Amino acid sequence: MQIPGLDLEFDALPAPVPIWNAQVSFAQWQSAATAVRDAGGRLLAVWAGSMAQKPPCMCAAYVTLDGAFWLSLPLNQQEGRWVYPDLAAVFPDAVRMQRAAADLSGVFALGAHDMRAWLNHGAWPQDHFPLQQDPGQLPLLAATELVNYPFVRVEGDGVHEIAVGPVHAGIIEPGHFRFSAVGEKVLRLEQRLGYTHKGIEHRMTQLAPLDACRLAGRVSGDTTVGYAWVYCMALESATQTTVPERAAWLRALMLERERIANHLGDLGALGNDAAFAFGLAQFSRLREDWLRVSKQVFGHRLMMDCIVPGGVQSDINVAQRELLLQQCEAVEKDVRSLFNIYEAHAGLQDRFMTTGRVSPALAASLGLTGLAGRASSQSWDLRCDQPWLPYSVMQVAMTTQHNGDVAARVAVRFDEVFESLRLIRRILVEMPLGDVACPVQLPPQASCGAGWVEGWRGELFVALELAGSDQMSRIRRCHLHDPSWQNWPVLEHAIMGNIVPDFPLINKSFNLSYSGQDL
Image 1 (spheres, rainbow, N blue to C red):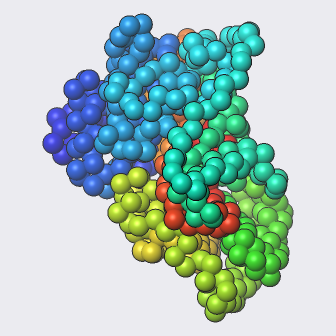
Image 2 (spheres, rainbow, N blue to C red):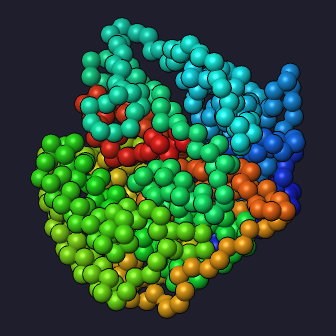
Image 3 (cartoon, rainbow, N blue to C red):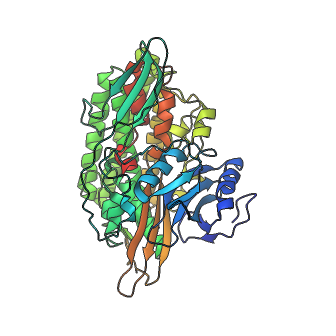
């Protein structure tokens, strides 16, 4: 496989989706990004590899219609710092990923315009980089003085700032939003995230590879199935393990149930943010019933720890299959009725339409992905673009909208609920018999693998490096990527020109993960 205009030798990683890796030079690092952009591709993730490797590598993953490309750049040192060429001029969504890599690994982008700390809020010294620590080391850090974050100031007559968060009125994760406004019209929004940083990627290096899926499933609680699957896919790629077919079908069943559960919750919350409490009441009822059946069938409301390396934790029986089919019929009937109510409600549509619009051109240039991207004409969905079992036999229908406003993001959710209900019914009817798990043998030699799954919010990606040993393989580096990295910066643009009271509605229409990005 080749990236057009770039002469590289790629190695295929053994995964159910097409993923290749290759090593690049300093000169090829930026030219590869440009070649991908010119071919209509996207940036998937940027991260620093294991700092124990000498020299360490900077990594980037790109997406084209042919698959994903994981490129590694051996780093140089300049003035005692590991450096690499900046990617932000080609892909603006690289900025925050590069800033996070600087905070965690001490690698710095040459020529970058924004060098502010992202995850380090002053809780650890500027010369401390957590991912440079030995996996077994728990450093004792001296107390540091917290610093004020240097927000970009907007000057002009009548301009004032509104500070929101990081502590919010609801029971939600912390994040700070600094609005610059004239009256109620928003001129600029700047976010300050990182408050839920937990040191997950350092903790992954302290866990056995077969156990780390439990931590992966807790990166972002609303995406526990997606993260568990994508980590297991990366581990199975690194160990060249092929899971049984029935296990793959059961994983898809859980992933689609997770997608529906989150869409039901969002549709209710979006109605509530537009003062339509009836919508919140009805969708909350449907979501609660949906989660209770998940608990009854899979043993956990969110299906946490149900996906394991090599397959799934347990099978479903005939009675459970019938229960799931019956629930699909009941939920579809109610959601179609609610869809008609939402569409016919003039007050609701007045709040939704034209609010928080992201044009297709802006979405493409900023790398907007997932369901928010599909609401702005970004036709990317792994289940359609790179289908693997069971999606490869089910012909998933991708839903897209073109207006890019709250109404479009609501419409995408409704369409995806109906499509996921169809997929679940097909899975339950056509799922083959057989084993639901197989053993995963860890290799004695060093190896790497990658996972790539279309979660409910968008693409999830895991890059996994295993360090072999005579006794047991261990995790040398595990990078977990959430689509919120791409989408949080776009939210800053979506609010521009809107009024401050519309921010909760616009924010909920994206419903991005704090925890998934902060790690």
